[in-house]
Image 1 (tube, rainbow, N blue to C red):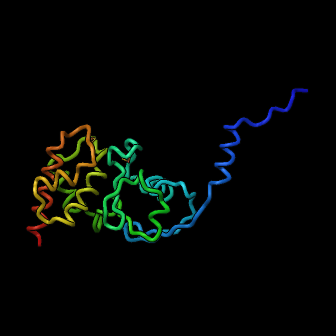
Image 2 (image 1 turned 30 degrees about the horizontal axis):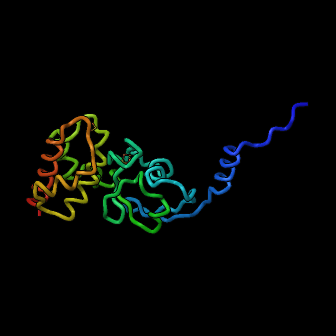
Image 3 (image 1 turned 90 degrees about the vertical axis):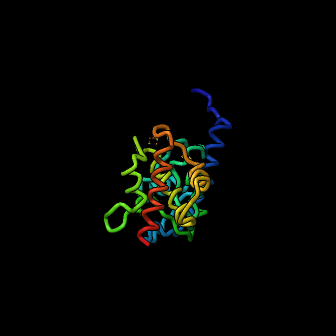
Length: 179
Ligand code: FES
Ligand code: FES
C-alpha cells in the first residue's frame, strides 16, 4: 500500500485561503436600483458588476489598473473598478454605462461619440464614456487641458484619441446649448 502523502504547503495554503474566503452582504445602488448580495470579501467591483449583476457593459481590458475600460462612477467619482473591492462600494451609488441611456435613448455624450466617430471597435468606449461623464458633470465647458486630464486614465488602441476628444467637446457644446 502506498504511503500516505501529506499535503504540500501549496495545497495547505489554498485550503486555508478557501477557508478564509469570508462572505459579506453588501447593499449598493446601481443605476438607481438597490441591490443586496452576499459576496466573497475578495470580490472585485468589476466582477461584482459584470458577474453578479450581469451588467457586462463595463469591460475588463487589462486587469492591472492601466486601461480604464472598467471605469464606473462610484458616488460620482470615476474609478477603475478592477482596482476596488466590491465591499468598498457598500452603501454607495454606482453608475455604469448602462445607466447613461435615458428613456431608451442614448444621451448627448453617447450620441456625440457616435456622430464624431469617437469609437471604432468600441471596447474602450464604456470607460471613456464614464470618465467623460464625470468630467462634464463637474466642468460644463471644459478646456482642452481639462478634457485631456479627464481621460488621461483611459486608453484606446483604435482611434488615436482625436475623435474621442472631439466627441467630448461636442457633447459639452450640445449640453450647454440645451440649457
Ligand atoms: Fe481595469 Fe484595465 S481593466 S484598468
Ligand atoms: Fe477600439 Fe478604443 S475604439 S480600443
